[in-house]
Length: 325
Image (cartoon, rainbow, N blue to C red; front, top):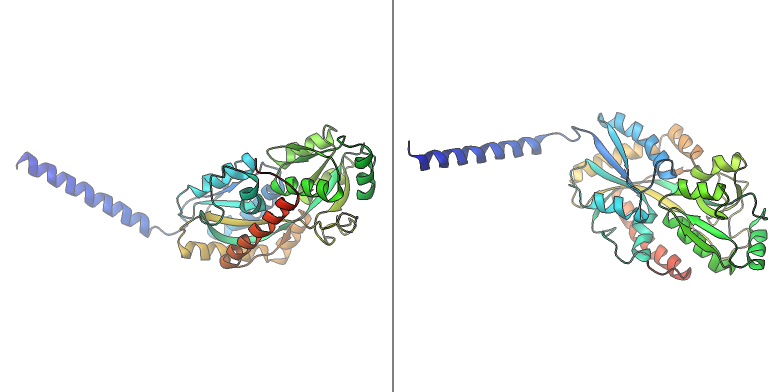
């Protein structure tokens, strides 16, 4: 047989093998291996803790392992960009909040992803209300006392942040109450909270899950929640508006996303399983103890919600006078 003919046959054979392998891969049922959930915040944050609880049940429902990968930093941009550039095969998903998908487009100049075009909405899982906490040495037991102290001591109070909700809440508080506050940013909430408890920063707006144990242990003092009305998660705490700060209504939401272009059948399966989990009364109750108001909806509802939240957060950030960094 001529050498040129042999080479042609080998090339054709290799092509057939590649096509066969591709066909086998396409025919492979989903999921057939571990799924990675990428989080934009560090371990111990509210998003991390609630996701770990939900992922235990999701793993059982799908019959594969769930790997949690924390990629904190750059206000969530690192994690969001990583998932946006991943294969849309249902094996790499983003569990995120309004930080990456509502606020970052108006906080960061060089955003490396588009929260709408680069992602496939899968399911919303609920809201994570925030609360204002202060170090016990701060001479204020109410928001009104904190405002009075801040006005009498301009520049003396500082606030930590580990997420966009914390950044915008702090800036909104300073703007609406007429205070001069120093902003101290962190990669995530746990290290920020450590510095508040250590007395290196005066206060912080933090999700209830992360902050409440320290309030209960008297390492921090809680003054109010950031939602318009009181939350049933901590009914004893007034809202910021109730406490005297006008036009204050900020809440963090949480949801699952995949890269753009995910197959519809995978999105439908994931949405169905996640909704079953968060709508179970016993799991909703568990999530409530973690500071999360759990509920869900369709992928289409999440997509519409993201667009609405972009409008809302643009206004919040503009009204608070925050400039892009």
